[in-house]
Length: 344
Image (cartoon, rainbow, N blue to C red; front, side):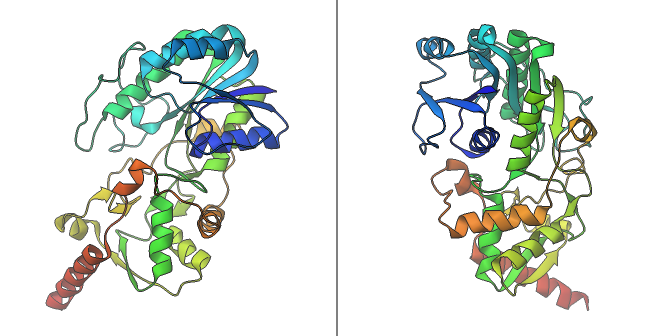
């Protein structure tokens, strides 16, 4: 199989390229070459997807069995790139997000849930950010999906709406933050309930499913997450303690108390969010199509191993948003303990 990956040096793209190489595919990457160089087994074409002349040169390097787009964020650009590549590829796999759903993260979701409207030729200014609701990012990704469909048609387009993706090389830093915090020891502020169900997916399972849709020529839209009920937040933190070999005490503080203290969901305490729909995404279609997910324990273990071996996410802008300071954590824990003492 011949696969072109748009992107391919960061997190999801890197995993897809690695999976393709492991499967013996002929893999080409197209990017600006500003990130880490990739494996020697890859054919690398340097270029900028926003420059039509670069995309035109790329098109002459085909044909491919599939294009996997991991770096499309502006609909108009996806429309241009996909349109230029459509004569030279059998399938376009677009890596999207659950943020395209109008009701994410408030309500449970399936592939039949309403998607945000965004024209396929929209520019980067389309859409607005609303508190606890649709975001410009979600609008833009919805427009990118529409652009891919406009260029390749429904029968040649596969859309993967990924949820929270974890694993080695995770540049956002959600799981790495928890691992490092747990490894530091002491009393750890744990959010909400240990029984809260979560459904993050390992980046390697997302990559394997992307390749599977190519080999099986699967069109359509798939929510790509671990199954509902496959893991809990308590298990996540227990795996962090086990992987780091740390004797850590977790103090579980209820949602309402954390909110009253002004703790920011999703960022100060990564992966903690109180809405019903965050971890209630129907993945039956992907499971029926062949998605397989590994136990969360393995994702946590392998991410810690990557960190210990020198993995670094500090050079990415989004990493700066993640994590509560130790001072702030201590303040919230002290307030919680005082509250408990007064209630006795």
